[in-house]
Length: 144
Image 1 (spheres, one colour):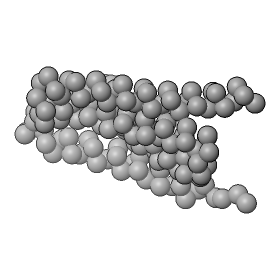
Image 2 (image 1 turned 180 degrees about the horizontal axis):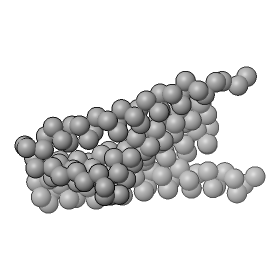
Image 3 (image 1 turned 120 degrees about the horizontal axis):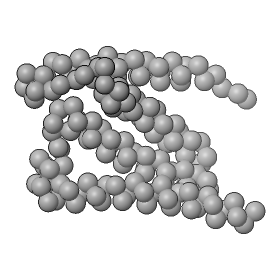
């Protein structure tokens, strides 16, 4: 039985449009406080604004896929990859906050050294979780 994916696509498009409207408005609203400068003719600004909605949509479908596989080797592997994407999404959100607002959350919460170490651990965690998921799929497919 096939499901209609149009409602899910509509939600994704609404999320994309909302993020494209809300984040620049928020950044402009905070301009006087954090001296934010958004140059909308610069492609880095657009890529920074566009990466988050797409990343969060991918995370949503990664968890949805892991859930629909209901365990097993592929379900567990997809779950590992989804958690890796979640850590990556938080890291990318952190990078965009630092880029647009000049706030390094990790360093403000944990200090200069510990903030850098936590950032490194998050980076390694993303790679390890994703790598473990792919390795599990690879091992299973190699046995077939």
